[in-house]
Structures are given as C-alpha cells and as structure tokens.
Image 1 (cartoon, helix red, strand yellow):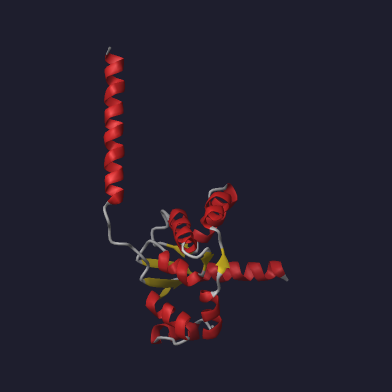
Image 2 (cartoon, one colour):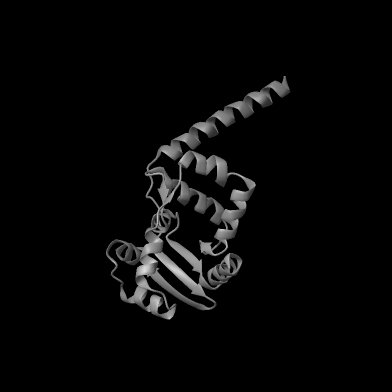
Length: 175
C-alpha cells in the first residue's frame, strides 16, 4: 500500500512538472542574440558590434572599430566580407541527426567552442548546436554572419590566437 502511494505521488509530481515545463516553454520570452563579437589575442581584446559586421557583409563598409581590427590583423575587408557571407548548404534534419548528435559532431562542436563561444565556455557546444540549427532552419544554408546572429548570448568571444594557430595547422596540413 505504501509503495503504491509513493508511485502515485511520483506520477502526480511528474505530470505536474511536465505541465509546468510545457507552460514555461510556451511563454514568449525576449530572444537573446549576440550583439558584440569580442576578439581576444592574449591579453588584448577588441569588440565589434554585430551590426558593424552585418553592414560589412551587406555593403562592404567598415566602422572605425572594425577598420582598426582589420588593419591590426592585416586583413582585407573584401575577403572578410566574402568569408562572413559564404553560404554552406545544410539540411536541418540531417545536420542535427547525422552530424551534430554523433561523437564526431560533438567533438567538432567542442573543438570549435574552444575558440568561438561565450565567456564562461560552459555551454558552448549546446549554444553552437542551437545557432547552427537555427541558421539552417529557414533556408537550409548556414553563413558565418547568420551563425553569429543566432548565437544565443549577447557577446561571442573569439580566441584569435588559438584561431590563428588552427589556421596555420590547417594550412600546413593542406600543403
């Protein structure tokens, strides 16, 4: 008798939690999205607003903070514009089930999260997965600017030093 009462209690609590969870998930909330991209190179940081990157992507124009960053990094603005606009095909269903939820997919997200993500680095894999899925969901394509627009934190941190090292390693591998 006591055991059946305990099971009944767990069942009722479980149903209550399920209903509460569904209710909370249906309440509209203010969407979080990245507003700034913070580039870190050792102890040096420079932030650029997402709006500045969007303007570069759309028109090719650069703001003073973005122009400074491009000059310091010796980067061609047109090349950066091409990179952030480059579209990669991605079927949402295949992306989620066939890549992002597999061990290799988790590894790729984890490695990517080590140089692009939130400041706390706690949920970078989940945030990247969510941003990728959201980016692909409307047009079955992903671009870097769209990924940054859909990243679920107000600031996205880019470890430029580590990213440069990855780029160099990749260049060496390709050669």
